[in-house]
Length: 62
Image 1 (tube, rainbow, N blue to C red):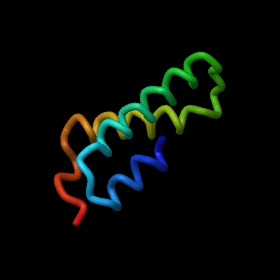
Image 2: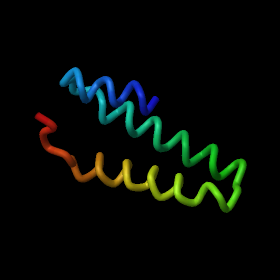
Image 3: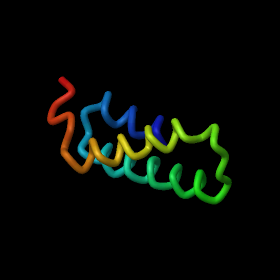
Image 4: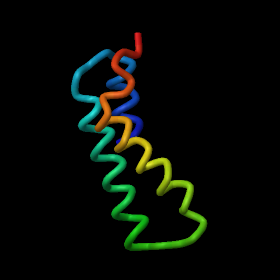
């Protein structure tokens, strides 16, 4: 899903934030179900993506 969101950003579409939220939230769910301390960085990245989308950042990538 991150690849789909990235393709949406490159194509300049308006649906990429939804794809990014789905990718980050599903990643968090999977990391919670199969918790391993080595996945902590992934949790931080997923939370960062959710925060960035919630804050409408970046406003423009062009």
